[in-house]
Image 1 (cartoon, rainbow, N blue to C red):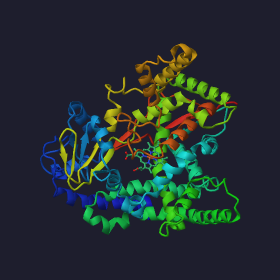
Image 2: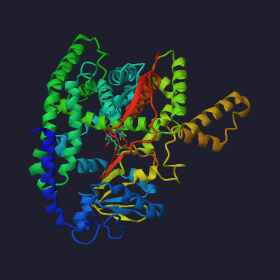
Image 3: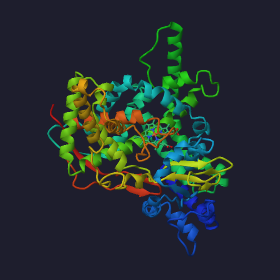
Length: 542
Ligand code: HEM
């Protein structure tokens, strides 16, 4: 039986179990706070069951938006039903409170474990309970980014050229999500495993499938009552095991070889600076750790990093392209981004490095704006109260241990009182203030002698505010990467990759603008970009 058929059978089985289970439970018992309003509860026959099933459908966004408009503006928290466990949605003004809580009070890892069931779907509870990969991304990937830019750019260029072709005379139709998934998988794996494996489809295919399996098996397994999950999880994760096995055929010999190469380098005293990738950093990090230092564990860690990186970046790349090329201002955006890239490359002598990328302010804004308007999670900042005494918010609301909470990322990002004309994609929304601040800085420095002591406080505030508009800067009104100490550690890499991708595509391809943006799909709490839609592309004559 093919694995996709197996998944259908599993889904049917899970739904049957779920029907029996949820019919017996009232949704209200999920959250032990009586004082808060609920949004989206169904009443009448099997009200609880219909509410839970409804939370898996496309109506979640409307429920969330209704709650946000009715309650969040008045600083009131509300509860939305979820299939497994309903969730308290705090107003945006309370994001700071979430960020300020210790991990022993509000836990982000626990929320991830609960929502993805990582103990099962990642095939080893240690993957999420001892998240070494996060430490390595924070410590090594971000710090090494400057030295990796040329490699990322090269891999993107090779990937886009491979999947979009080189025809300069005729238009070619390409699936956006499909090709972006492949390009992103190659570029990400260039940094995870290096050039020898990152173009190998026999490895990349299973690695991408594993990422799908993790999301799908977690979603299905959540339909099963928690007490039965340990018993049946093994069936749900069969595809995950299969794809790990397929990828391991390449990954394990590769990791073994790398361990050997690093040992040889140490013995000979000749450092291997060419082995500058995630695999090397990981091997060095776990060198003294008897449990973690095995090729099998390291291979599973690499698969886990792929899971964190591939879907997020694929969805983002897809959204960016659809947002730009469906805008009525697409021609202007393309023209101005091309000019910006040309100028930056002219100043760097054609070399891509940190400084060149830092000059791409409009490109950065186009990426951030797409992450804002086309965020792919309806809620964010998911946390679970883990303190046995519960957590008390600054407004006095007490949330008992076990409460699941978060905020409404979608609604905050689409709120006109936070973003002017919030429903419209405005590619240069974030670069305009940055450019104005840079221009003001230039005027100031030209008249420096006269003005040295007279930088006005409000100018300084504006300058600082403008600095905080880069894609990687999170805030309580820009939550696509989360915010605070658990904010996505891969965002520096992801932002660099997205800017280089946009720059490469714009400089090397014409893309026919679309009259209408293909719609995203809203399922349960997720927002999925158009998976099947195409664009027409033509390589530009050099
Ligand atoms: C545009 C692409 C990406 C988006 C939108 C994104 C978004 C997110 C979000 C929303 C979170 C949860 C933050 C929270 O709990 O508050 C997260 C966590 C995480 N992301 Fe990303 N991500 C992206 C790319 C990546 C990449 C490329 C990597 C790896 C190289 C990565 C690795 C991680 C890890 C390890 C975590 C868990 C952090 C923790 O719990 O402390 N992400 N990401």
